[in-house]
Amino acid sequence: MIGGAVVGCGGRATTHHKPGTSHEQATGSVGTLLDVRDGTGHRLREVPAEGAPRVRVTAHPDAEDGWNLQLTVENFRFTPESAGGAALPGAGHAHLELDGRKLARLYGPWYHLPAAQVPEGPHTLTVRLYADDHTAWAVAGKPVEGTVPLSATAPATPGGHSHPATPPGPPPASAPAQADRTVTLTVRDGKVVPAPGRTELKRGERVALRVTSDRADTLHVHGYDKEIALPAGQEATLVLTADRTGLFEVETHESRLVLTQLLVR
Image (cartoon, rainbow, N blue to C red; front, side, top):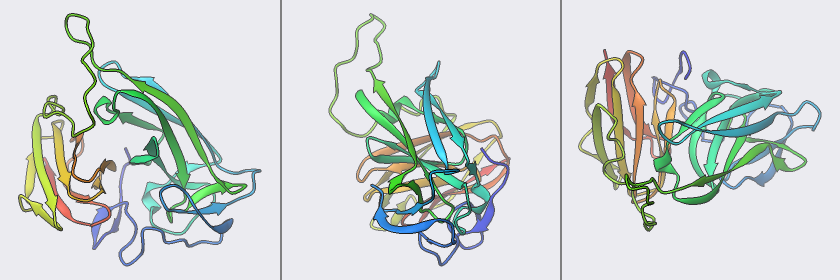
């Protein structure tokens, strides 16, 4: 999604916040830092309505799977290279939420949302803009965000009938069927099973990362800037195409655990 990354998290190539800083650094003199927080616990950084960042989100059904989300922004630019730094005017990243639950951090105007991440039924997608220090841009005490309704239906069977609704739970094991390689990992009591190692891939291969964590967290692939929410006790799957060579670490955001390394040749 981006061409490079800064050095952070102990010297690794990353776009996360810098070592020794909190998730919400709250630095910079832009706007007014409020005591009010958004639904995910980030403080609001209020700026005047004139010239303030704006965002609109559109969901385009994908011909193969899910939706392609398009973010249209005004007075704002995505700055993945400085994530974790001080708040700069009209700069930062976005968060994607489904019914108030964070799915991913976004560093550009396009994002593919797999159907496996959206349960059957009506939903609301929200995209909210944040500064580099993880404070939420706000106008008149309200976060700068855009929403779009989204309705997911059960896949049709060959006979033309829909599958019956299933109770909430982990996605089926067949979710990453289109991947060339599958890496299955479990995080329990601060430990990764199996122990972190390397997964070697050829450029262009698709890899599915299937992770189950005993606590809510976020899975992040460095260098590719791909993220997915990890609900507590439920398996989550992130599928990506290894289209750039190098050594890339996969880790959890909150607990900062290295899960594995992707070696792409």
